[in-house]
Length: 294
Ligand code: PDD
Image 1 (cartoon, helix red, strand yellow):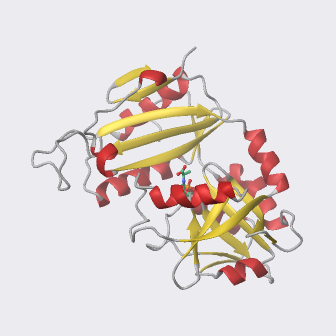
Image 2 (tube, rainbow, N blue to C red):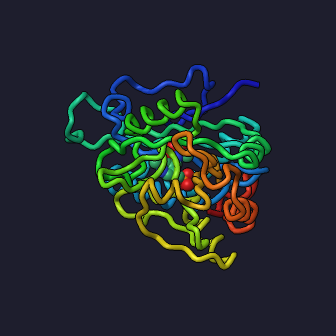
Image 3 (cartoon, rainbow, N blue to C red):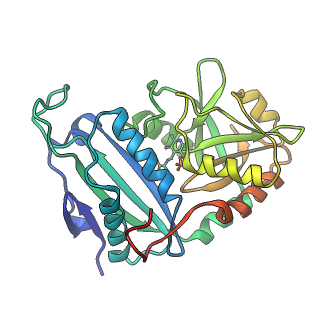
């Protein structure tokens, strides 16, 4: 079996999958994306991801490449052809192909759609969460509209690389006032000394994570108090717990920040509880099933 990707209407061998050299995503990062988790035959929080995709597209005045029903059929088909039951689907929509010009094409072109999928072993994430991960802090050097999930990820990529070089999983981005915004590809939370969950409001300083939204629901169901407010690096270092959330990591405890242990340097009970309860609250959309759902 070879890997399959979907590129602009065709299912092609992953190794041969290609877009045009004048795709505006390739030249100008003029596009948006989503990463959706697949867990044991279900899409997790698919509706939230597709709603956010619609919002990202409309903020950038990019047309939807196809109806939601058709898009879900493509996502299902890519997962099916790659025989993936647990892993991730990646989908990217760019404004399309046009002679290079910063301004939009005068005659609108068709948006370009690429979908890929890769398998992942959920047990690996669970093992990582049981041990906890390291993070470092980096200045947030991104533009103002990080609420849009664009493929313009160079500052995120540079921050993540710095984390890798420091032996850490994530770079926690810090704004000019010393407040944490979010991770390079995750949202960041702390648990204060009195047990309150704190995460930055989903204003323009962060991406409104779909996992973040579900974790807010999990916290409510667990009777935990949540404060959506900004917090500083000093508060994170003094916190009882620090953790991150994303489709790829679910709820992942951070046990060291810039080489300093958080509390006793072990995963905390709140993060562990939220992670354990996550799948019971998240939306599950079967991979096999009617394309009328979602
Ligand atoms: N990243 N913040 C940023 C900057 C992100 O890129 C992401 C997602 C998140 C978490 O969003 P969600 O809970 O919807 O995954 C927050 C994806 C997974 C990525 O770029 O691979």
